[in-house]
Image (cartoon, rainbow, N blue to C red; front, side, top):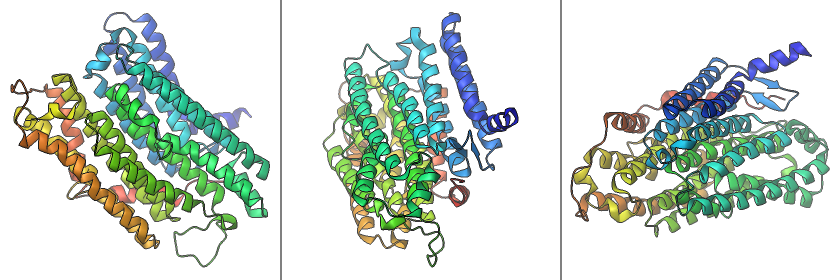
Length: 499
């Protein structure tokens, strides 16, 4: 038993590193008084980096841990890399966020909760047991509830946190009810056990449909899919920009990872012969991907249409984030390795372009004290580097070449067309055209409108410029040289979910 525990811990080192960092950051927040912010931020950064290094060291392993509760495989590794990069960038963002700096007395809690949220997402992407999946989602959710209402001095912060908790509690209840029905049908909470039970013989189709809808509702909440998106605009507006950016990328990535693993492991029949290489088949003819297709259409359409009317930049990017969840759901609809690989590629490019857009919004809010779209008038003349970077991020979010966003959408649409989902690809393309409008609104204000009030140049410190360039350069480079990223994504899909 001791030997087995040691072997399990060896594959669990990244999560252990984050857990230790969380505990040390909490204690340091109580003990350290001088230069607390600098010390704890460096501590959180180093702890997250160490976890990321261990993720890369054990990147080639594929093993189940702790009696099948968690799996360490290339699929989980890919998402852990994305989440680690996002966490590191958010910790760096926090150094220059005026919202976060105003709460300097609670910096120990802030960074400790960031690390705890990262730990929860690590557990989410590797969970292969339904109960472990729920526990990991709850760890992520509870920390995000607190962080979204972290700036209590802001008028809309507490409201955002309260709405987040209410919707989160409802979605968790729906998911647990769905899992209980699925357990009643299969007698298993292990995903592989569920798959074996469904493959062994027919079950009640109506009960399986209800269970799946309830579980999809829980996933929909985590990824901000319509109609489970209502919390997103208010929480994104009320939370600090750093937390908003974190939720829009890392939390969404973890939600997609656990959803893909759940459907792939539970409902895919691996014994079907005659299928093209890389294609999957649903167990018992249960076409859950049709449900996901409907969600994808609703999500990207509503997200883009409502974003057109937004005047607050954080709300605009919130609805943009909802729309991008719809694009990524298109990859889940495709029952193939190519569809999942397209989602993985999209998340890698989404990491840089979406964090970059939020970073620009944060810097403008720091300098001008406003997140309203009108405050961006004339910004292209006052802050040319910042404005140009924002244009690059918006072009990438719209999916135009030669940016990384174009490559992400290219692989998504290619996977759809390869699987004969032509109508869904057409709707996705039309939505991309709609998204151009609200991105161009901001660009027009920056470069084609005269500034309101002061027209003094907006200067950025060197450190902030370095972070900005660190996000702009990958957004451009991955649009031209994306071979290694595609290879990494394809390799991560070939083997995941060891029984």
